[in-house]
Each structure stands twice: as structure tokens, then as C-alpha cells.
Length: 158
View 1 (cartoon, rainbow, N blue to C red):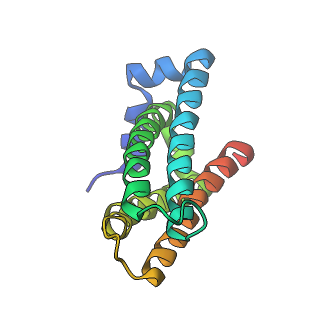
View 2: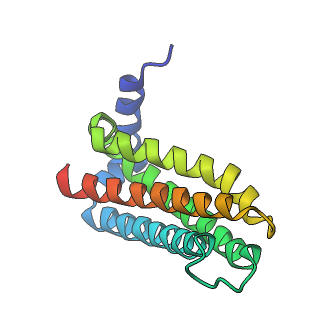
């Protein structure tokens, strides 16, 4: 069985992790890029979620609003995950032990799973039932903003 503590210790000892951990400039740059990725995700979630709720661009077909937002969200997710993994590597043991970080990761997994299953299926159907549109919009917004709030909590409280 894989011992996560040993894995985290090994990860922290890698050259890239030590380089990141030893450079406040590199850590700051990665943090900034990470937050830009999150901003893109949140923006896409906000636009598409409000469309699904019927608040924004109600005369536009759902697919025409949601498709570009979904593409942007994938770019933002990819950016945030890549930079997040790099930042995680420099202090994996401490970060992994944080309950707020664990909450952020659980919400992230739920948001990604929701995005690639329910959300995409719903937004590709311009004739989806209104209840399903509204519920998908509400759940998507709640999950992505939960990720953002947990991330903010991690930054401020850990």
C-alpha cells in the first residue's frame, strides 16, 4: 500500500519542489498564475450559471453561452491545477494535513465531476427542462464558488 506521508516527503525533496520552496518570487509568480486560472474558471461558471438560472442573456440559446464559457473553464482549470501541483510540491506534507485544503480538494473534485457530467450534458441541450437548467446553474455556481471560498480560507487561515 502506498504511504502518502513518504510520498509527500519524497515530493518535497525533489529539485523542482526545493527550487519553488526556496524562491518567494517563483512562489509569488505561481500563486498569481494560479489565481488567474481560478478567475477564468469563476468567470465562466458565473456567466454560464447565470444563463442557466435565466438571469443573464435569457434570449440566447444556452449552448451558445455555455460552450465558450466551458472552454474557458477548462483552460482555467488546467492552469490552476498545473500551478497548484507545483506549489503543493514544495510543502506537500503540511498542505495535505490541512482540513481547509482537504475541503478545497473535495469541492474541486465534486465541481469537476459535476462539470464534465451534468453541466456539459445539460448545456448541450437547448431544449433541456427549465428545472434542470436552473438546478444545474445553481449547483455549478455553488460548487465553483465553494472551491474559491475554501481556497481563500486556506490562504488566509493556514
